[in-house]
Amino acid sequence: MRIQWLGLRVSGRAVLPKHSFLMVLAMQRRLATIDKLNEKGLCIINRCILCKAACETHRHLFFRCPFAAEVWNGILVWMNVPARTMDMRFELRWIVGRRRKRHWKASWYMGCLNATVYSLWEERNSRIFRDVENTTDYIIRKIHHLVRVRLLFVTHPTYEDEIMENLNS
Image 1 (cartoon, rainbow, N blue to C red):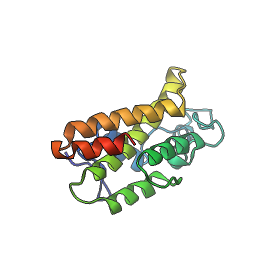
Image 2 (image 1 turned 180 degrees about the vertical axis):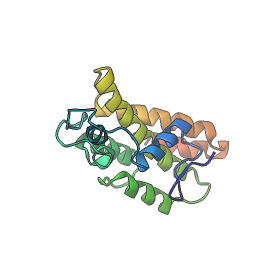
Image 3 (image 1 turned 180 degrees about the horizontal axis):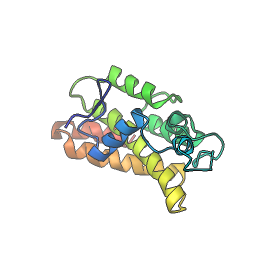
Image 4 (image 1 turned 120 degrees about the vertical axis):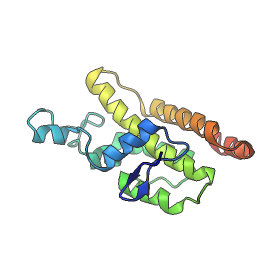
């Protein structure tokens, strides 16, 4: 199943469907962030749950929040991509612009972006509804595991050695 946002494909072989679904909602700015809840008069808090500094908006949460930026930069280091802090739309366009068709690294990059967005939203909700806080290192390890398992499960066996070498570096 292909999931797209403005013509950019946000799904892929290494992307879990629930991750790509949440990614589309995030790209459309349809998630119930604090700024959206405040507009409807449903929330009185006006700070990001992750960094407790700025107002929580989609743009802030994905990846301008210092907490989220640290997670994303940890994933970029794992992918051997120069660390930078941009917003989610830039990252999606960057990945789409650099991927070659049917190459496993394209799936890796897209899987990492989708899993990161999903994990940040999950962490935010965990802090709000369960009062449980995880560290950035824990979230990065969880994303590594999610993407590694999915990528090895869906990739052709001839690429297995190359994939393992890159994923474990």
